[in-house]
Picture 1 (cartoon, one colour):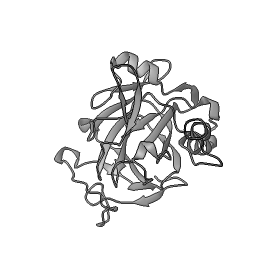
Picture 2 (cartoon, rainbow, N blue to C red; picture 1 turned 60 degrees about the vertical axis):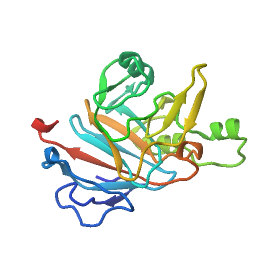
Picture 3 (cartoon, one colour; picture 1 turned 90 degrees about the vertical axis):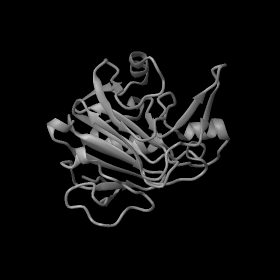
Picture 4 (cartoon, helix red, strand yellow; picture 1 turned 135 degrees about the vertical axis):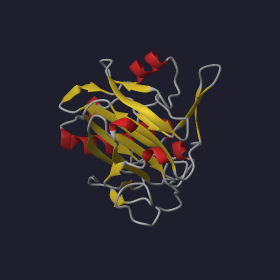
Length: 239
C-alpha cells in the first residue's frame, strides 16, 4: 500500500512477488524466520516530503534508510480516536530511558501501547525533539522564506484523516542521533544509520500514521535523502 507522495518499489527477496532490483545502494538480506512475511512492496518517500496511512493492529511497519544518515519522523493516532496519540513523555517515563530500541514499547498519551519495536539495526533514535517546523528554521537558523519541514509534511498529509496541526506532538525521530551532555545540553549529531539499515515497529492498535523524510539539514548530516517503508503482515507464530 503506497499513498500519495510516495513511490512504490520492491526489494529483492523481501516479500512475495518482489522484483529483482534493489533500491539505490540499499541491501536487504532476509532472515529465515521472516520467510512468510507478506507485503505489497516498499514505498519510497522523496527527500523533504511525507505520507500518511493506516496501520492495522499486528501489522509491522518497517522503515528503511536506503542511502544512510537520513532521519524519518513518525507520529501516530489511534484510528477513529484522535484524542489518543503517540506520547514521548509517557514512553520515556515507562521505559526509564531516552534511547529506545528492540523490545521497547511506544505508548500513547493515555498510557496504551501503540508500537512495539521488534527489530532495530541502528540502536539510536530520538524521542525528545519536536518535528522541524517553519518557526524552528526561523528561530534557530534565522532562515528567511519558506523551508520544507516535517511538521508541515505531517499535518498536510494527516489532514485527510481529520487531524489538525495542533494535535501533532513530539515525533519518534527514527535514526536521529541526539546526545545529551552531563550538563543537560542537547546536541544533534550525524545519524548512525547506514544504507539499508531499518527498524521494525509492530502496531498494537489500529493506527493512523504520518511519516516523513526529514527536512532539517543538521539532522541528516547536511543532505536530504529519501526514506523507504513497507507494511508487513506476519504470521502469528512469528510476531
